[in-house]
Amino acid sequence: MSNVTEKVGKYRWTVVALLLFSTTINYMDRNVIGFLKDYFCSAEGFGWTSQMFSYLTSAFTLFYAGFTLLAGWVIDKVGTKIGLAGSLILWSLAGILSAFMGKGLGAHIAARSLFGMGESGNFPASNKTIAEWFPKKERALAVGIFNSGSNIGAMICAILVPWCLLAWTGDYKFFGIFEGWQMAFLITGFIGFLWLIFWGIMYKSPKKALEKGQLSQAEYDYIHSGDSAQETADEASGSNKVPWLKMLTYRQTWSFTIGKFMTDGIWWFLLFWLPTYVRQQFCVGMDVEQTATYVMISNFIVFGVAIIGSVYGGSIPMTFINKGWATYKARMTAMLLIAFAPVVLLATQWAAGSFGIVAAIAIICVAGAAHQAWSANLFTTVSDMFPKKAVGTVTGIGAAAGGLGGVLVQLLAGYLDGTFDTNKAYTIMFAVCAFAYLIAWLLMKWLVPQHKPITDL
Image 1 (tube, rainbow, N blue to C red):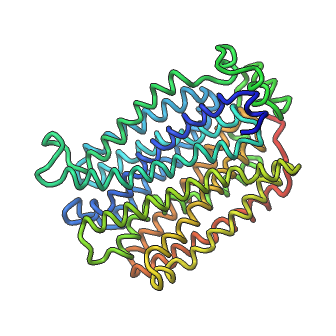
Image 2 (image 1 turned 90 degrees about the horizontal axis):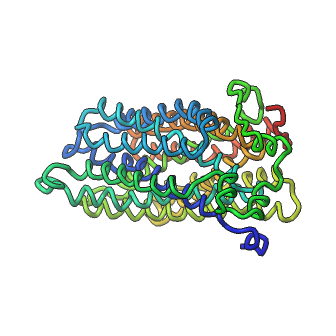
Image 3 (image 1 turned 120 degrees about the vertical axis):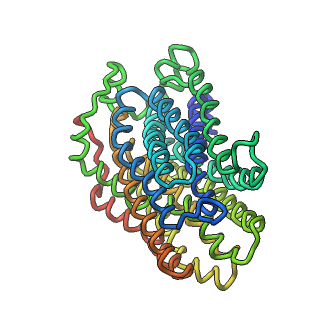
């Protein structure tokens, strides 16, 4: 950390740590489904088809998208502490409920839809918290840190879910009642309630933390350096009025929304389909334990490398800003550089056929890291352009669009997987993923060619 940071204090990084853990839990709960797909779609499990599985993940994504619109607005109204806590309670309960749904697709769709409703609050609340707790130049780095929880959650699931399936199967059930797939839901669901204890004790708004002596005046002033006069007045008055429909009239809202729509589905494709890809492409003829090992290691590597992308990608704009660049120019330049990286996905199937799993996973690692770097900066464009009181609402609108994009990508993946052979299906999917970011950047730049902060809310 710089000398300036050391002088003003570091409590804001404690807040990031809390968000990091909540996002880790969010993605642990979310990723359980991806690692259970092979079990659900096997004769020993539920006997589902890949297309049936795509209906399940699409239902989650659809409800996640729809309720994110409402969640962002609610969080702007009630505040981040209550909003994020309520969201986590709902998604944790829904995750636990999934363990009791039996083998019926309809029952699991109902539970996963409720789960999507709960999870819809995590990113609007987290992004709003970063806007409240960090100056603009540090926000992308802070977002990158908490957003890396999505990778940590996936890495934990890569170990936890296969272990649950192997430990509690056949005649070996937990307490003679719960099978491995049920324990995966139960364990990840209950962890969220442990986090609630720390969130309730440690989190306060910057103003309340200052009053309680947890935050120094120097750090409080540093956090608010660069705030507009409107934001300062809003915080002093406690104003949180956000005209939701008016948000849709701004090109800045649509810029963020299109960025999310075009690229969120790519990440969700990796989350839900990477285990299936590894099994179909590289594990034909292997036994269950060998396949589980390949899937676990591959996912662990991909999401581990993505952590680097998330944190490093969030720091790239700071390099430009420290050289005197304007914030928006620094942000968009970083995103353009990042958007070229996923193009390497075009070579995935060639690398898989020519050099095997190591080469293919290396390419996917580049794309995964690039997505997380992109995401850290994309989230931060909202607080670059909108006052803090509107960040939750705009993030919710964009996240809803991202969820809709995720539905379309997953339906496409399910269709291709059920229609074509493995090589052709994934060649098409990786081509879709390869150019999504460059197209998104061009559309965003067209909508907002220059930085135009919103000042009339």
